[in-house]
Image (cartoon, rainbow, N blue to C red; front, side):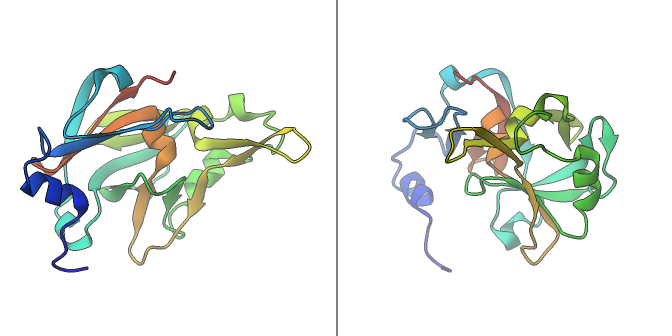
Length: 199
């Protein structure tokens, strides 16, 4: 609601955190307490390499999302053609990747069918999000969701869907955040990514 500070902003105001940032590690392990939310900084045990930061899209204050500008989305190295300076919402609360219904078709076509028995997962293409000239590759092991059927068999489905939030935005949810340790920097109004270390 307007005028109500989010909990982390209250923590910043009360100087309860060392740095005005929080970071997220999402584990690929099913069950257990293997994911982490770090308030006030980062934890190097969850990522490798440097964290690359990107400033928020100018529309971010109006929309309230952690919103970056995407240069392109590619599938198997080929541009889908519908994400040029597109809005990318970095969202831990969305368990899949989404795109505008009118724009996601080329992406789904280039990926192709995901066999429910998981037999073709290894042959599916890599998805690449290009942000400010930096490419972030997402392999099918991240964007294909796996589970176990009632008969105990492994099942797979594509973790990408069309979604219309009212404006044409691409939501970069948990599949991306599992691959890339994500830092939300409130002081610099930026989001940073580094390759997560999956245990």
